Image (cartoon, rainbow, N blue to C red; front, top):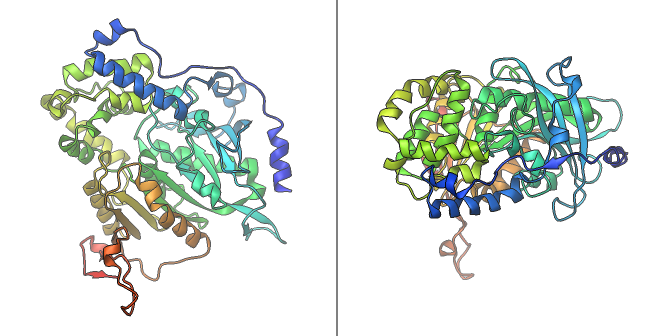
Length: 478
């Protein structure tokens, strides 16, 4: 019955107008006038070529992403558009059904704006019994997924590149039997407003109303219980959502998985001094600050880099070419110390208004995943945020993965966070609200013993019980 309904909706799909919407070509003369030499130009060209397959920026469906006439009379959570996505087995796990949709949400200033996203279902009937309906009714357990940084311009919407390859982060959930609703965030896809990058209260709002909209579309086949999960920008987003009024009294909200989460912006910028690669995010941060605070002009970037960074707006670059603008430059060539001092009070204010883990309570547990070799989100910042959240009385589990970078930590930790989500949907409860930090060491055969020994020794993991003081307690091996 469920698949019949979904297949029927798939027949409603129509062909829209498509074309390029981001990562535009720029002339050699324009590059050179913006401090981008041949090496820089080659780096940008390679970045754009790699990104097109992920974002689908050269095949943007202008017709679908345009604001419809029914928007003006809508309320947050209302569905404005729905379109089925045709995919081949190479794009998705076999049997996946996916739809892109437009709904109404709230912007950073509280005004109504359209947002887009996608909803995907695994093959087969639901995997859990509905607890809210009479009789036997199988439903899909629901996970709201918040994506990592894709850019700050409308053409950088993940839902547009759904078929092309932006599936690595959420497809494991489909394979596990979960339905996934994933917002693009307002300002990505539809251009009614600008994307307020890292203004996490806005993105948390987008996630929440994407769930409301998904229920209005497919509520009869979705569980009332739900979990939010996200990576990078999305990791910070779902952490902020967990502490928001949207879920404070929602007994069906089971928890949060925050992977390599963006948390304390000021500390993240300070950590960039030790890593020029993460300083490549400065153009995004500068645009984000100017959008969060009307009339404010950030000065953190050096004159040389600020000129080069203008190419991002001219070319409507998504994340890969935008971050690549910093390649070949040292930190001292990227950042103006005087400009950073000028921006510091505004960055601190932004952090105080938008960061998670600032003392608010979450009604459900939070699992935090962090790679210890992450050069985008500094591990020490995530540890600090975790301990501050713990001090506020939250139940937080932090898993640290040695050797894992910002992206590689997702597949490395997949067995843990998928099992955790299964456990929560299965009714799993912690016996104690005590916070825990664990270092997930990989298995090593140096720990093995021969069959002449009584037993083999598995890989160890370091565990710190924090308690709600946020201070490490005893350490033991298991």
